[in-house]
Image (cartoon, rainbow, N blue to C red; front, side, top):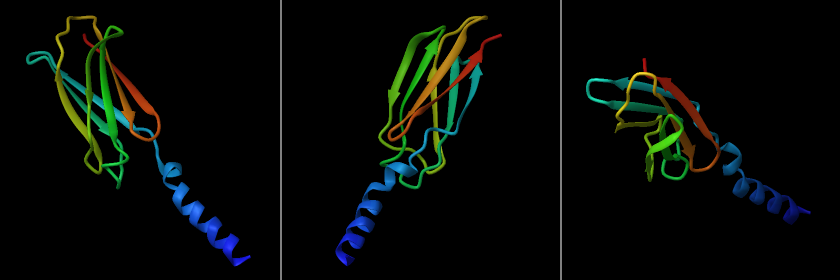
Length: 112
């Protein structure tokens, strides 16, 4: 009986980390037209930022991929990344951030 109890506890502990995984909470985008730099701030709190982190960021201009970057880790609060993206008035930028463990988040920015 005790053996089954300890086996159950051990399995629960070993299988628990994926349960605590979560997608990015939010993405903040700012674009500087003068420099054509898009600043991406992905809020994704993780205490295990080398195993549970923002793995990939994709940037789309009018639904066409223009940048895809991958990352090996993140800061405990999340990730900030800058990319150069040429735009013109009326373009729509979309950013997708993918978590290494669970899900993704998207945000768009219309260029006036």
